[in-house]
Length: 547
Image 1 (cartoon, one colour):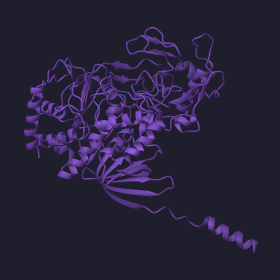
Image 2 (cartoon, rainbow, N blue to C red; image 1 turned 45 degrees about the vertical axis):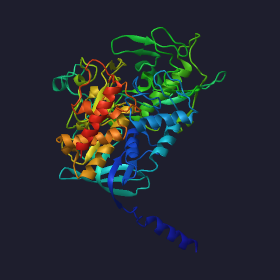
Image 3 (cartoon, one colour; image 1 turned 60 degrees about the horizontal axis):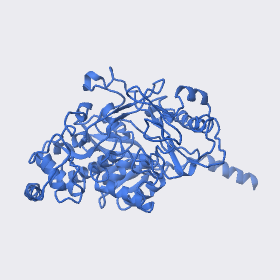
Image 4 (tube, rainbow, N blue to C red; image 1 turned 60 degrees about the vertical axis):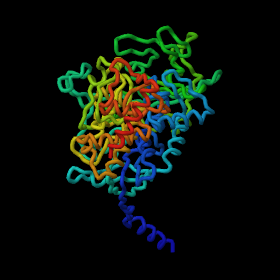
């Protein structure tokens, strides 16, 4: 009897195991990636036949799984320059903390909060729209310059083959671009190609911005917490180097105190990206990883670099009161939801960039006028400096770029591939350069890209058009822009027009359509009651002509 059981068990082990069955799903729109931009797209597509594919158990990208829940924004964001749904997200965060305007009080941002709070709110905002598949994108099929199928595999091996009509690349690194063979770039362009003053002398596809594994710590007075020294600690400490000093792009050095605000600095290190009064998120040049490019990075080494910075803060960091180290720092693993206390995914500053119908270059963002270059195909707004950290392969922290820009637009042409006809960039992979990526990669801009890409995809399906066709048709562009304005997506910079202003949409549309000239030397509309009534009436007539 015993031998029979043994034989049966042997036969069972050696029998071929059936693979999980493949299934096919047809849908209107596939959101490839659950990034912050992907979440914005999902919110915009409520009620449509939409699927989202994401391989992380936290949607939200840089604001959740990447740990950077201190929003990088511009000074007008409270009243202008963000979409209505982005404002809803910000308001929901504040409501979750009882109406506190900035829960963490971090000085780098007007809104700092815990990643898990952002996750819960994004899950609530997107619940009504996409069917979420927890799987990793594995391949794409292209026919006649259209992506006809996208495959994704779950952790249990189950394969799903999507047959979408439109696809939004909302991955943080432009994964779909690579899988579908869509033209894209990585690293730096050559200066003689783009004409950008801050481009490199030659192109280098490996020279991408450093990435980071943030972590969160709590200061517990009177306690001692010392995380183990990771392998390679001394090399990391000396080469990085680990420091509270911050080199700047113009050759200066800012010397920060830990808790003290020192002269010439905007605040102390502790409150830089503080998420709550007790918890600080650490995303600093000390844990920016520049050892290897992101797309083929040594993530184990990148994590050890971050854990080494934590160990340095606990043991060797200069104290404000003299001495070395802050052993009172307790690693809060629960904040990032991981065993090692690091973010679930690295904070991505630069991945693949689409070769698009329109490429945004440095000169577009730094003119002598109040606004950046105006685009007739604008589908959104943004404003941030050309913020570039040190890059992969650089031996020492050199201080990134921090070149000021003018308030800019998001042109539809930067979301549209030069060749493939049914894909749109819906996040950080839009048609920018290495330099201008530094201005377009931030939270509200990524959200706007995702939301506008979603509205564009839905518009194209309703009209039976392809995105590239819109670029050649002023009539279709006006119809899309009117749709965006109706949805609360601003498209032209007028900082004195809040969403409640009766001419909020009219002034922007007429300025974009060339039917009203905005002053080139300031960002205000400066409307009287009479002028407001006139613009509203003119817009109503113009809207009547838009089909």
